[in-house]
Length: 194
Figure: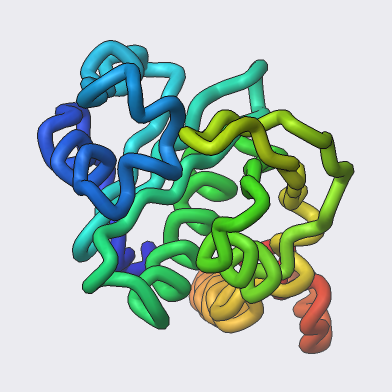
């Protein structure tokens, strides 16, 4: 089991502090609604909150196996820290839950979120005009997604995990005196086993 840079939390206390930060709150939704409390959202066990250093990821189940992620980090915690945490969050979701697709929305003008989507290799699904409310009026919103197969083809560390598993399996076969053939190394197979 990998050592994740994120961990699951069942309390909204930490993420509430992040989403209500003055530089984060305007990107979470209508500011005129006041402070947010994600307690009910996090209390729903169908949803998953993964926290890391300076923020976290709220995965809201849209239907079984499909989650919409909301990435919320304090300004001082952004950068490569978030990218590493995002890779770990995706690995957690795709290997420890029923997740087969992760979706996300990026409002026009949120430069950090747009750069993040590109850096993570998310696939643009479509764009809608005037779909995201801001104090200055509704702006366009881009919709992104990544499936488990897209993730497995590119995820860092997955091939190594699969290779490790195959080495352990082969050693167990030899120790048990099994005559089951041991297959040759195959990175694609290692990725999907990983």
